[in-house]
Length: 240
Ligand code: 4FV
Image (cartoon, rainbow, N blue to C red; front, side, top):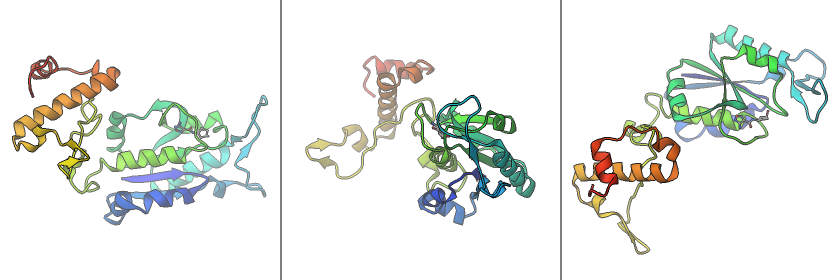
């Protein structure tokens, strides 16, 4: 997987691309991250990447010309990419979207700044994604979120492939509670089912915990679940 990032602040990415799992994944060749600064594609003496909005209004807007020149130069140099604009007006990033993007060989993430980018840039991209209903100072953190979430789903990135199983949103469910040593912590014990060694019981206990958490915290997800007879029995009070 190749990540191409178009950003006015490439230095922001060293913390993500150089560290921990993502950094190791790059060393292993499981992924690569290329950073391109659109300022390198400006043609005026001031290297202008933004300008005032037509029609007036506060702030500045990213000019289309350096952004599109950067996008085209990247694809000319390294091949076609699936191009994503990071913007609050985009579709919400969800785990199903992450899984879809993890199948794409080359992903380009275009980061906005200021009041956003000129609308005409969207015509050169394939989709727009938002990481949440709030406004950031730039799309870079959103791009890092996409890189992190997608990279976790690439072969060879997570040390134990099982880590990506049973996690939140994988089957439209929130993940069950996790416990580790000590067995007793400030008077709070680990649930007895997890200490039983009975794998069938542990599976049922975890499934019920996921179902109850999703029902109580994310009724929107719970409403979409296809519950099994076992699910219903446990939700109705049957012991896991
Ligand atoms: C954002 C988001 C986001 C808006 C103005 C960058 C900023 C500036 N990107 N999900 N939420 N972007 O707030 O993706 O251009």
